[in-house]
Image 1 (tube, rainbow, N blue to C red):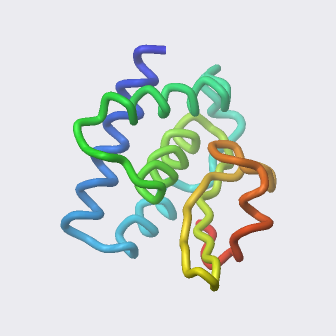
Image 2 (image 1 turned 30 degrees about the vertical axis):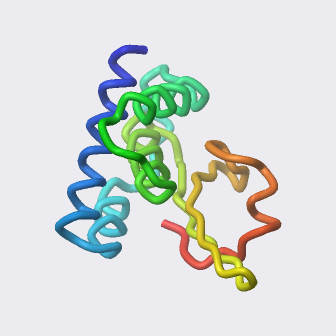
Image 3 (image 1 turned 180 degrees about the vertical axis):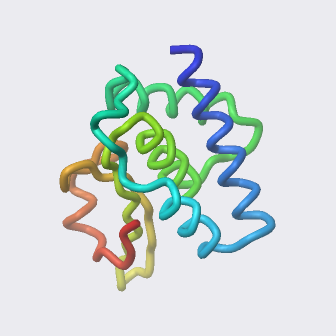
Length: 125
């Protein structure tokens, strides 16, 4: 578990660097390069363990972690462990809100399951 927390923290830092010095396209490119996970590469870590490790990493991360950073980092770690996770960015019109989360096989895995009903999907990667 400690290894997963450290890996999650490093993924958060990697995404923060892209958010600071790059733009959304650089995050998108990183996720596209880290293709959808190959089930034959699964490390033995479950989706629940990886999401729990990310929760812990977010608590101890030195800066506030927002949903885009968290979703991108979670997707990255899941894919590196062989899971076919996708980051989803959605928006709501009135009042205008946006949010990012992670889905696996069409189910929200790192947030509330009803997000798909509240937000209209704008991007999936």
